[in-house]
Amino acid sequence: MKRRAFMAVTGAAAALAGCGKSPKQIRNDFRRALGKPTAADLDGPFTAPASATIDDASHVLARLTFGPRPGDYARVARLGAKLFIEEQLAPEKIGDRLCERVIRHEFGSLADPESTIFPRGKDENDPLQMLFPALKDRGARVGDLYEWKDKVLLSDLTRATILRAVLSERQLYEVMVQFWSDHFNIDPSKGDCKWLKAADDRDVIRAHALGNFREMLRASAVSPAMLWYLDGRANRRSKPEDKPNENYARELMELHTLGVHGGYTQQDVMEVARCLTGWTVREKKKFFKGRVEFKKYAHDDGPKRVLGVDIPAGFGAGDLDRVLEIVASHPSTATYIAWKLCRRFIADEPPQEAIDATARAFTESKGDIRTTLRALFATSEFWAPETRSAKFKRPFHFVVSAIRATNAETDASKQLIEFLQRMGHAPFRYPTPDGYPEEATHWKSTLLWRWNFAGALMDNKINGTRVSRAELVRKVGMDELVATLLGRLPSEDERAAFREAGDLAVVIASPAFQRC
Image (cartoon, one colour):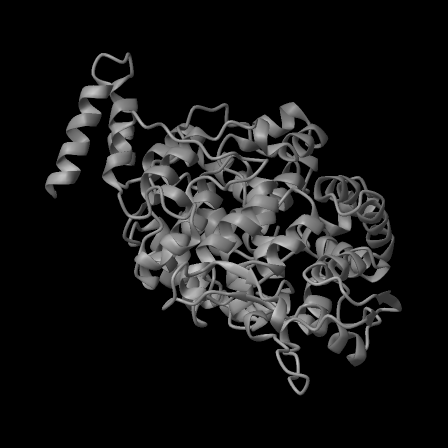
């Protein structure tokens, strides 16, 4: 152990001495300090699903979370599925001590986004914070991220994403963070995105995941990482013969707002690109690197016409907000966002009635994401029996749900990330702006690596990830564990197969566990 780490742990011991904590709690605090996140305590009760079909509690746990942990079903069944939804729609009221401590101690400024949902906070007197200096108090200024190796930033951002999905009590919030990360996808391998994606994740995605779509769209448009990724920084018209770069303008309408069939034309793309000229970001080799700036001399300040709306000359930097208002309030945007949300939470081919109801809520609330989701979860299509267990888990969902269901400890090590890479779904690795696919057809080829992962998980062959199998079975019970993993009682054929195998890995690898 390095001297700095030793001093931090020594300080932690002094702070914990006489604090009234149990030996187990003190041990867990030390494990957190040493970068060994702990799983939630197995306190029970462990009432498991008792129906042969997916009931309401199992359904909302499957769709609004990355999978239930032992004990989650009992709590949701007692609380009620609809009250659980309301609870998850107010994440700022949910205590998340374990997740917050693990992330803060591991990753410093990646811990808390500066947002109205989760204001930044830190305990300067906490000696455990001394142990992880990398990124500590960094990121408030985007340029500070350039001080770190890009591979370290990507690794930390990936690990933090996995740990939050595994540990957080604010599960719907984390699900929506992943949803918007795909919607506003940025590949960190391009240029300065290597450093700037960390700030985008904090200041755009996590800050607005359950906030307002229009505000998130605006934050994304002037995100240093997005300006780099879709070439907005190179969109300028300093001379009459200069042609604006259309890359971001096209993706703004095709992927971020109206959708590919949203009714815009090539002329609209060109006009939007003209509106967005002049915005740039300072590069790595310059002073104040990472700073977003508007260069008036590089802006086309003439009159434009976007989607039938005239934008007079002379608006300058205001052209950006005028364009965003036009595309964000367009009916096609409401339909497109509603379709994507219904595809995520209902079915790969969502019913039109649910899309319409969700789109109305999006329009009437002017893009309020919580209001939009509340309307979606109130549709009869969301609760319909035929939609339950109809979604095929994407690899990230599958891996995290297995870790949560078995109450495994994990530090999101390199080996765990490699499993996700083999399955094609490691966070922040998708190369094109459309983000990771949602539909099941894209992911069916990952089954072999899912089976390999299930065996490695239950045999404790993944570095940094460990299942306490004996304790799990003793406290929860094998039958209850199987029902928790499936979200229902197993069929007779499943029960016979599981009994013959005698291994939870077979349950995790089963067709039923692949679905949610």
